[in-house]
Length: 151
Image (cartoon, rainbow, N blue to C red):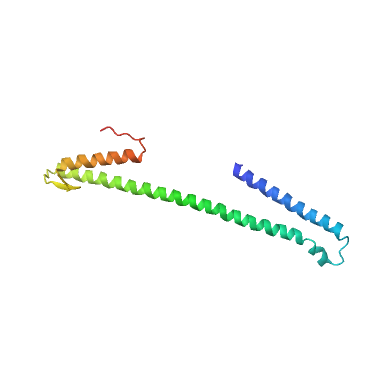
């Protein structure tokens, strides 16, 4: 049995004991204050205090449930945002790798034209080296320094 399941079972048992104590306590106190109710309705009315206690506890439980749910939603949104950023970064890295592959193909076909990248005119070989350096740098940055690529 998991720790969470045991915790839920213990809370359920504690709540049942509390309910039993409140009902028995209300019954005992009310019979001492009002020795013998004459009608069934009078006996039922004696449990108004217990009704108020349980209504208050229900309101507190609803508030706590909403509060915990809000915390869980915020945590989920944070995880989703983090996953989206990682996905965007992976797409960028894949795009750079595909561009490098395309340049390699152009070099193998013997193309010699020059390209303008970030305001600089570069040959295919220079462009490939620049993009490869950027790809490696981005990869190392995403890995938080854990991934070192030998150049």
